[in-house]
Length: 361
Image (tube, rainbow, N blue to C red; front, side):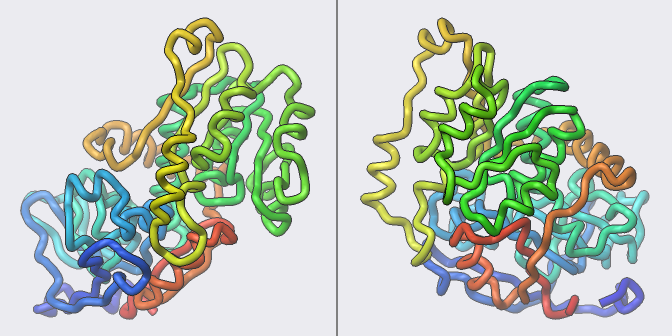
């Protein structure tokens, strides 16, 4: 669907969205229809051309995402990022126009054909990116940006290990680390992901399906790592911390190894065991070893608008200069969201998954 095809005078506007009425597996992802909401003062409505899928959306559907329970509850529409065309303006928005191509950052609600977004969370779509590429960028690069520039502060020449280096966030981390000038060791879970991690810029890639992860990590950095970025959780956290060098930093932003790769439901005994096995870091030990553990959940940082704007501005510049590229993308119809969730849960995907509303296809 092109910008020209959108008629802002056409009222009412039909809405299609994915709704999860209560926690569960893929069957909880239901398609609902209705009328698109009108934007209030200081907001815009975006006719969505593409919506990014993130692993966090899976956790939302399962009922395990704390901020989703706190901020929204049930029912909920998942989704943190969209790209599309403005088709209605709220009062007071005078620096954008109907027909402008934009990206929007949402605190849930992105799995829809139309989304109302407050002006501070809307940015112009970078020139040269398709809607699918643009929708694949905000959440993963904002996560990577916060981890590196707000928390870890790696320096040029330092050696950094990135788990899940072929995924959306992992690939973004690799690209930003190379901009900084770091030596990057990327870890992937299967051989078909090695080339993707290298394409992102990893200097070394450890395929833990065929190599001893920590033996190879020690070979590549015998004195330890300045920074390790870990969204696996219990399966690697203890060893990640153990492979930091003096003054090293472990950045934690997820716990994916506690979630089953098939079935779509939490395994409560597995979760309980994982919780019990999750390392507890003693401040006295950390002080004596001069190592740090840093952690965050981006959804709790939604009010940090200044950081958001700084990040989006930096991303736009890096895209324009060719220093970063959108990750490889696999697209699904919005109504095929269940398959998208199955695939991202499997751990076999590379890059980002993107949903396409019917009006955009």
